[in-house]
Amino acid sequence: REAIQAVIREGHPRFFLGSDSAPHVRATKETRVACAGVYTQPFLAAYLADAFDRLGCLDRLRAFACENGRKFFGLPAATEDRVRLVEREFQVPDIVNDVVPFRAGETLKYTIEFL
Image 1 (cartoon, rainbow, N blue to C red):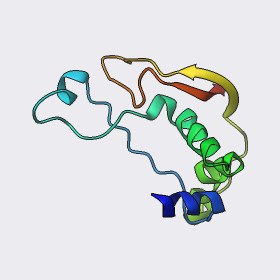
Image 2 (tube, helix red, strand yellow):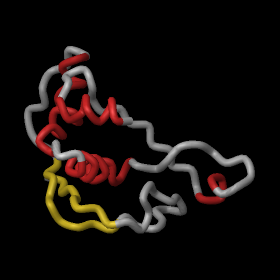
Image 3 (cartoon, rainbow, N blue to C red):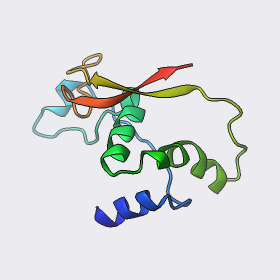
Image 4 (cartoon, helix red, strand yellow):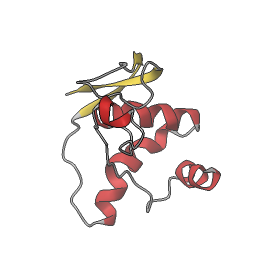
């Protein structure tokens, strides 16, 4: 974990966001043989901003989430911003459409606004 955090703090260009959200309904998560994974998708940018801020490298978030992957795969750069990160507390809901999101009930320091 510490090695990954160090690479993130450095802003290494070969490290970038990859997401695989797991929106299994609560009934399939809270059983003897539960489905694996966590539901992150609707709040992923806020989770990342919170983590990068705690690591002291919020300035590296844009490259990690938006630029490094495109460069690695030879894709063109985005031509316009689609979201804006806002420093405003946000409480992760306890449940979203019968799915319990990652860090449910916790308060994050950031949220996003769609442009």
